Amino acid sequence: MPFGDREDELWEAMKPRFKPRTVSDPNAKYARHLVNGTGPFAAPAARPAPAYHDAKATLARVVRRTPEVLVKVTGRKKGARHLGAHLDYIGRQGDVAIETRDGEQITTKKDAERIADEWSDPLYWRRGTTVSAVAMVFSMPAGTNAETVKQAVREAAERLIGDNHDYVMALHTDTDRPHVHLTVQAEGLDRRRFDPRREDLFRFREAFAEALRSRGVEAEATPRYTRGQGRAGTSMALTQLRERIRSGASRQPTEADLRQASEAMQIALGKAKQPPFVSKTRDRWTETKRKYEVVAQQLERTGDWEDRRLARDVRQFIQERATIETIPDRMLRDAEKRVRDAQARIKSDQQVDKAVPRGTPPPTRRR
Image 1 (cartoon, rainbow, N blue to C red):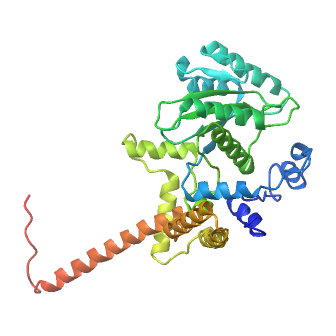
Image 2 (cartoon, rainbow, N blue to C red; image 1 turned 90 degrees about the vertical axis):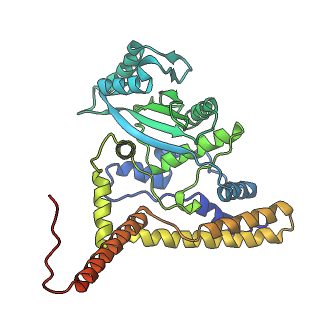
Image 3 (cartoon, helix red, strand yellow; image 1 turned 90 degrees about the horizontal axis):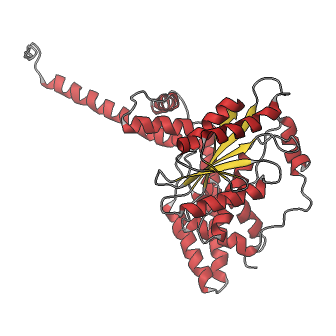
């Protein structure tokens, strides 16, 4: 085993451990179960440590730019009416078949409303408006076989929630990226609620990627900083607003973009500092690159041709990603450019004013 003691360190760099908040968390009980391994997280047997070939295969997929799966929560549907409207949307008013957990196809609005009622009726005993279902989307880059994507989503859903939660799914191919809308009943058979957090979404990403690979589609699920990418994902609502702006359907900037631009301008003018997480992101990427370099050295010593080739790919990957850029970095770069352009205009105007003799009347303007 050429990695030796470094194998676990490399694996943690590519598959991080989550640290849930246990203070001021509205669902502290969930966090305690997660930390202590009890409740829904009580496993009959401990998860085996990753094998050597798994760590090396994951590293190879990362440095060779294997497509990353995308999994997002797009909303939480409260009540039968809200859920019914969502099912009507993902079914494109009957043009797209909605498949149930058992593979039954639903194409009529009446059947979709029946599911919405069935999922919402058991919640009558809960006070206030309660989430009936959680909407998720699974996506892959353009060119991926759409049917394979759907099959992989079904396998991931069965593996992670199929024993306790009902679900429906709809495959959409109206965009370049084939994607599946997975809608999960929030109330489980044992009354446990489906409320996915970051660590849950990461498990879905891993299961989705594994299901795709088992069907011959190269896919991986790793954190952004593992790949040297610092730009965080955005919510579906913000993505849709930005798309409306780019398409010309709207000219009103989003509040998030205005706030980020304002903060970046304050930093560019020297009136504020970069958020702490920016420097932490850089430090984490520096540490990740160090681990990659150590592994590259060990791969070269094995004498295996494939290992030496992987070591070369790792070093090329590190070289091409010498730095990591976050959204604040990008916004700051744009703000600094605007400041430099403004200073250049002011300087140019001052030079023009000095070149004109005193007493010279201003040029007449044509009306």
